[in-house]
Length: 537
Image (cartoon, rainbow, N blue to C red; front, top):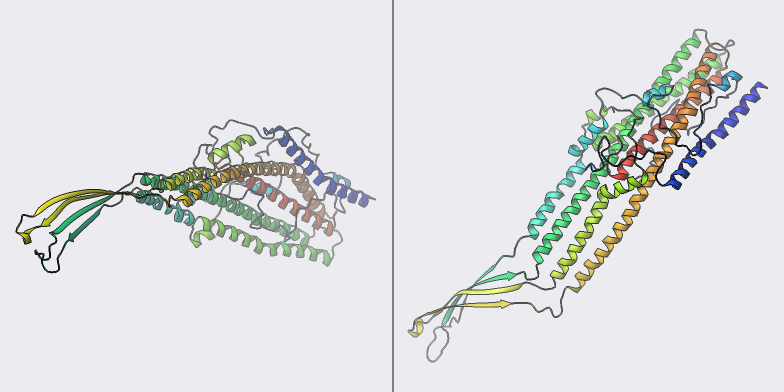
């Protein structure tokens, strides 16, 4: 009878747990959609927000969709399975053990839930996610500083900036004058009365092109606009690389915590196994029960290789972005709390306005309109070719063959094109079409940018709600149930199978909590990427 009560409680817990989580997130989403001002998050002004401010030039890319874990955070208990709600009602537990600690109140519908508290809840995994890491470890700020000076992709793109400046210099150069020298009326033999001609003439001509349609100024305007676009694109590349550092750094934190949690679990299993070998545990021991404990310990130890490989992969990914040498990459350790506190977040509408004012990709698109408009003016200026001014300061006519004095003279002339057929119609039409295309691209990017901010905002709210639910309802109960199970198992009141089930449930809850913190931290940094300034530490 007691066994049936335990199983029924377990069934109801598994069914109602996800429903409670879904209802909380749905309530938060509905409230956010109806209010539009973000009641779930306090709305401060858009002044300086430490660290950084909305007028900061720091451009933190990347995709704002919920990112899959590029690196496995590690394995608890040697299992790679989706998170399960722990089962406090596992078979063999007494009714007092099933009840667990006093129930925590769920957030009331329509009331904004509080931020996750700074203090860690009960449990080894929560201690790990709230630790700062080694004192000599790499902080996120230090990683971002090194990114600016060491990332090879960013450094390679920097070379395009002086190239753009050189294009401005080239566009502003004036046309060179033409110096022409000729000799005319050279006889085949000599001129005489029977073969009159000449006299032989020597000319020095200077021809200078006149830019009457201001093509040079138009070229300079296009080159300057192109440089400004390139600078904004460079800032957007930096933003995307900073987003890559964000993800790689959080992956490294999660992989490190996964490895440490697994090592702690193995130590706990070894301690329990030692006590069982000394006589603790079930009153009626059998070789099979001891074998089960050893098998479970072996599974956990087997997961160490995967956890260490995940940590090495995370180190390699971050080391590549920061251009670290291999020996430093292998020793790379993150410093900073995975579950980091943060200042109050502006409202969603304020974040969208901040993104429209700070996102470098949008700035590049808007500057692209100016460049396209400059190209239209350049195409119109090219309708008329240069007018050539001809000046002959010295013409010498040799009259010596005629026993007469030689003559000197000068000449002046102008050569100008007649735009009868070619008036650069095709390039003008192309430039005008490009201008219209640039306007359309800016409009589309503004809508996409607002969508990315809304997605990042919703992801942050959902991640926060999930973390609060796990902290309040899952982790304390799972830790309490495991402590009870260990005590009762060592006292001989619990069978090996029930103890292993509870150990498995605790491992699942620990991984569920680590994943919730991981998602919460990543959603915080995704907000920086979406807005284009660093709102979150």
